[in-house]
Length: 327
Image (cartoon, rainbow, N blue to C red; front, side, top):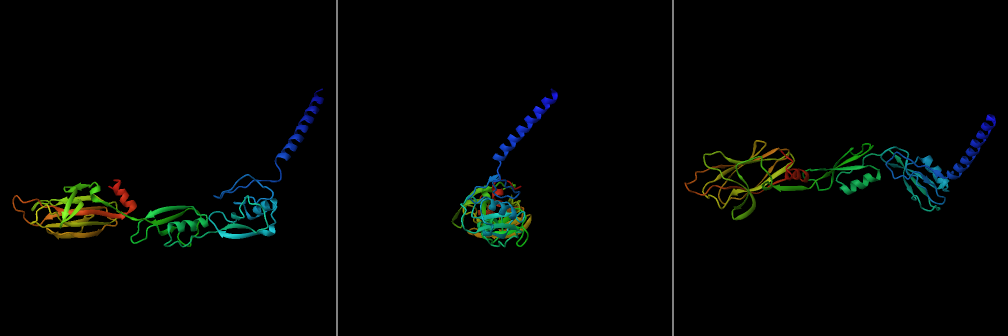
């Protein structure tokens, strides 16, 4: 009895195996193609080849792509293989023409297959032109803004990897930043005994933004110091004596960068002297005024003025100053 039961059980399992095999054969046909790739390409997987339409063969090897095309009814005599420089693994399909989903016709099928890619020469190219050239070789791009004196805004300064070197992954694109500026009157000084947010009149011309220092003869000079952060290109201002101050006491104006005297001017009433001081790489700027004469008792105070005082530099450097991120 037990032997008969075992025979019945075995026959039942066999029957179910045959049924399942028939069902599986109907469900998974020879037309099912799994397209997979480790490349950063737009690949649809799994993808069923539809007779009469070009399949998606991106990311496949040449042999795999030809097999899939043949399954779709494409004559391999019409398939042309072209090597193109492309970032990543070599000998994989990175472009195809006609595109997948297009009805199969009599046109030639072109498969672009990846080969080693080198960095093109992008000197003086615009950011847009450089991105387009790198997209052609499939290179992901990170743009790094960088300031360079005299460089046209938005042009490529350099690349990493450099021109002619092998490209194996992400490319750093260094692009020229525009110039920007900020008034000293908008910044918080790190030390000051001057008035840092006033108006002035120099030689009859109004200066809506000014730093005013009022030195006294025989006493400590008046000064103000600002942090620069090393990214500022220059300091610009109009130097003079405020028309509303003492007209009889000249002043010695001195400008220091990192403690080093970089400019000294003697100014008298009626002067309006434009100055531009290079500051690239400097960390601190100090403006100083020293009384050079003797004021009469009861005379108006001496008002040494730095009119329209601006720091000029790259956009990123000026933004850091404006946001108070430089100490």
